[in-house]
Picture (cartoon, rainbow, N blue to C red):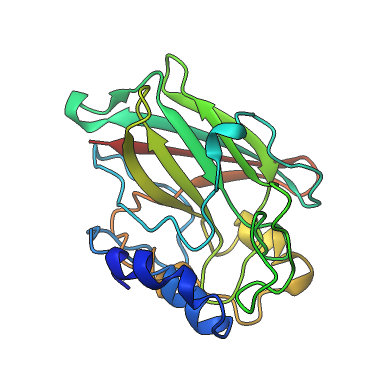
Length: 240
């Protein structure tokens, strides 16, 4: 679904059935990427100086991101610990680290639900009054932000993912994108195994509307660790 159409119709469609609107509202917008990842990717990521693909914020963007400037975004949600390390580079400066950039992230909990939304057919559980798994940090001199969270779950129509919105120090939007997780033998995704939901009906990266064309792995993270000690995710996301 094109971004303009999503903005006009996405939230008006909350009364529709769960599967169709959720899957469709998370499709690529009209700013296309030129990259793909396969289902057996182990998370090597991209070594090229490439701007991260632009993706949709919806359907569950943070309503007031400036209010959640914090490193630990867990807010009591249960799940395996995940440390998220995002480095922001600037393509116009040969992907040198961008200090002072504002980075927002948000993702679903172990059951596939988002805070700040719910009570509709799109998400039946009502979490509209809470703000878990959402946060903001400012990049250091190395262009790095670090968040403490839990390994995301999944919901129908999407692979496991994290949303990211990057702004410059003045608050001007530079990039809205998403982070993919490696799949296949030995991956953290396989170890977590969808929490209590399992992986039956899971949408893998190769079939995901956002990640299926990420040929160079620009949105693919590297994830290490285990369920006992927690996992660590690393990725560099480049802005223009």
